[in-house]
Length: 383
Image (cartoon, rainbow, N blue to C red):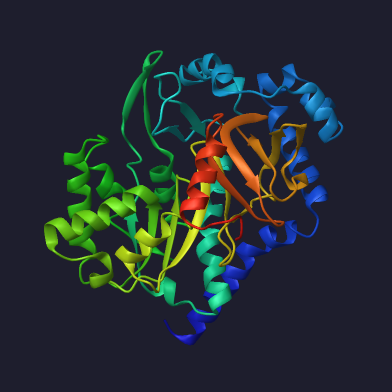
């Protein structure tokens, strides 16, 4: 990369990071502005008009008029949206349908993605951008991204008289991000999709073989995907090819999501497989959106306050996410262009502002499991 290209890349990095960084200087004001933008979207939908989106005056009024919801609440409406009644909760036609890797009461969750919503998911790239800004180097952009994401097309479901394609959110926005950032991904999302949407181990071995063959000999500087999959890939390479990822590539950054403990009890395994030099950067997101990413070497993520309205249900009631005190735990409630006051089902723990961790799903035993893992890894609440 010549000097001029490097300078242009750093200018682009600074531009992408500025809204995220600026939001941290005025959290209350930024969250109020995000709410007003979301209300304009909701006012164009049947759901939003039902709860008087146009008449909402502020966050307290929003809480009074719009109920906290779960997927079970939305599910009957989403089925109708899939059948073509998009105006029920969407202000623009969906361009993709995301499916969860888990299930809700033995049923997969289907979440529509709109153009506006998908644009916001590019925020996951902020983790890598911040790494480049802090290292003052564009070296990470000079190589390729080892793409270990799930397929963006898994299958179709019948919706009225038409077939609706669906896939995993990570694959859908990886396909989209590839056209929006300077990083080239191998395998391409299209090549991954061509292997089919099965979660069977036999198909995962095909994906891993594809990734190894396409990236062998390439300058891999970045790994993106789901943390457990990255660990599986490293183990598979050693078993079949008698090598580890660290033997093939000098990877600078891993941007990983989908599970708690990426920077704590999983970090040792990741570095053993990919090299001690690798910087692990956690992405916090779900099928419903990308809500935060790691900002620096502190082992926690920073919310995308400039994009989503973020609340949390604690033992003392509902409050804004930024109002949580260090050590406090609560269940995250998100408002996105698609979903209003949606209880996502994750437990969030606050650390020193503006840092958070997701400690697991919203179950009574999650804090116990989290504490046990902290003790086993000598992670006593520091970041």
